Image (cartoon, rainbow, N blue to C red; front, top):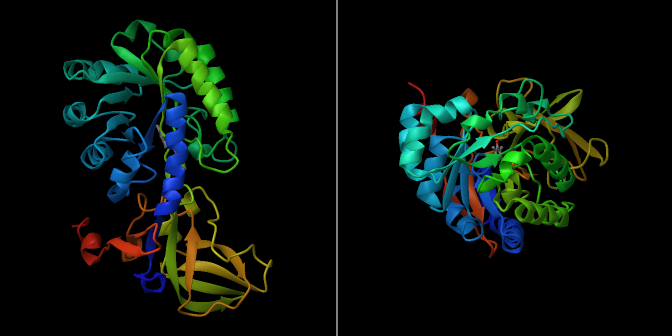
Length: 375
Ligand SMILES: *Cc1c(COP(=O)(O)O)cnc(C)c1O
């Protein structure tokens, strides 16, 4: 299928770019011996799991459904972390996960026996209480009052029996220097327990495939941890796996004017790229510039009734016409996993731009997908 023939809205994942990212992550595994897992919450395009599985050690999940998806579609190492587990979910998790991470000692006590029975490797998440993020309080597990991870003052050394791993996850889109700072804080508080562990999981939020990522610093850190503590090291990036590896293609439906020219698109921030409003951030747009930078500036908005469903103001070299297609970039991650049908908006199709340049529609959605989750 040609680009111009793709139905809109549509997420298009770029296979070549995904492979570039996977090669970087695979080289990291090879050089350091660390295990890299796909954090499915960022990217769950399971038709690509066989390809991703050729490069990475496996998957990690935020609960039963993601764990099951990783198990069914990739079938390699399968880890899970959740702030709490239901007893009935645990009965299935112990069969499909090799590693289960608990958020508290009380959760561990509750599910300890069944994990032991199924020989699952159990870990506990700790909170190093070291904030390295600015701006995005909502994404900071070390923020004040965070429920994520056991803080040092609540850590129960006497309850470690059966626990084989420690886990922390504190970063979001960060570089290796912040990980090094975080590891130092972790080591000061919890390093004394690491010696008796089999593994350490450094979580996600490592922007490893970004061009300015300090990969040598990361490699050094991993090597020094392995040497000093003799543990397996896990990393579970989500974003870094599919960073800059997808587009959201949209068509201009109408142009209205209220002080500024406003484009009505068939893609919506609220429905199809919720992080634009939640984070918030301004997505990169192909051939789109800062407002006023080029001669023609427009506000990009959507077909929903939400007044604030605005993606941002962008300028262009040439005037935009109804029927034009726009390509939002970096739309593989936290997009199709977070979308919704608010206003009865159709879900974007999911397509793959293959390495030979062809575009293949992998899945399309319809009215039934909207109706099917309501009653
Ligand atoms: C969100 C999350 C990840 C993945 O984070 P990215 O920022 O997408 O790399 C990994 N592990 C845990 C526990 C998470 O909550």
